[in-house]
Image (cartoon, rainbow, N blue to C red; front, side, top):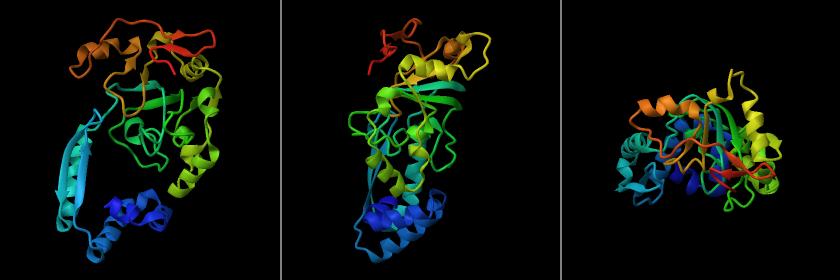
Amino acid sequence: LKMIVIGLGKHEGTTSIHKLGFSEFRRVIPTAGAIALAKAPILMGVGIVENAYNQVARIEAISPDAIFEREKELLEHSNKIMGKIMATDIDVLIVDEIGKNISGGGMDSNITGRSATGIERPHAPSIAKIVIRDLSRTTAGNSIGMGLADIICRRAAEKIDLAVTYTNALTAGPLQGVKTPLIAESDQTAIAMACSAFNKESPSELRIVQIRNTKSLEEIWLSTAYSSEISERDDLSATGDPRPLDFDPSGNMLWPTQR
């Protein structure tokens, strides 16, 4: 239905719908979609559901008269099998890269729980601080989503194309996602800045999670504060022994990932 209303609506359709605000999508998209289905020669819809491993889990051809009901069912199925950060109560989330090739919003709000629209994402864990290390190469300077983080590394900030980023945000409507967070000179400084916000008796108590991006969640890095939780859960397993983060002389990360 969104593709019928916004996709086939092109620029005019996109702009008019987005001006109403994302909070109105639940009401407006079905209403406008019903009008389009009644008046346009739409043969069918193709529903594609992706799983947590970025693989196609289901493809269905849906007749126009069945789109409303079947799309609801496929959405429920999608929510059950989508990727999630399995760790809970995160103090600091380190994201290696954001980009339009990863999510339309740079980093998927369903994963982080932070949305430029303010709409609640019930499947996401509680995350106190987010650090962005870099922009993906494919995003070509579009840094939408950075405004939902707390700290961004200078290497990422220097790649930002403001014209492209602002055009994206102004077309979509919400501007929160393109506001500039704190800029840190290096990975090490960014992580230290984020960790300084917590009053913990020992740094080992900090619950830190690092991910490549919000699409790659099969293997993530957890601080040792999660050790007992990992051992008690069937859906998490450790693949190696603990080791310290490794930085080069400039303070940029060598391990677990290098950008």
